Length: 241
Image (tube, rainbow, N blue to C red):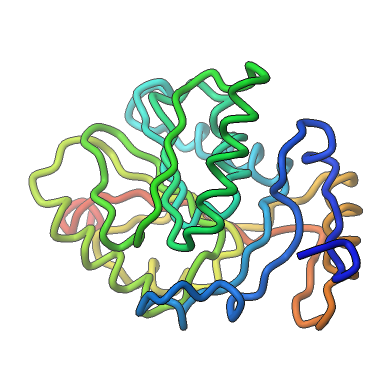
């Protein structure tokens, strides 16, 4: 997407020399996968929202220090959340992106970020289906910025239900723009630790409103906040206590 087509830079990209800006509608993210029809859209997470949600998660008393957790971005797009996560001392940061072109851009952004010495933790980008991705052993944080619709979310939780049996290590979910939150709330193995609006900083609000105002079709809207949730995989017995 070019400037003449409505592409608008976010200050984050200008400051750090990466490309994570713009908005790509879900219909333009097809890559031949059966999951294509459940794509939402690509839009980089507001840095201020990301930082506040991570802070909220750290207040939720996770079982361990942040350096014990692997951060996983499901639907990583161009990788903005990966870059932001790598500023924290996570054990490692992994991005999973279905669209090969977005995954390629994310890898370029990661390389540029590392070259500037901004990453304090290892980053890896995987091109693949989030449902087929195997959650690593040990404590993990799964991050989602509304990457897909309810059918994929249900398949994802079903896959996790099978893999979590006997698995060691906590699994937490950070969910921004939580359109499919009802799917998570109905799952017997999940306990909600937080739900609420997380405000954009004034600078992020101005930038995101400008980006959305320049989209050619005007089909997406933006507010000064994001509706967010944090969930913890506790298992059926724990969730019923």
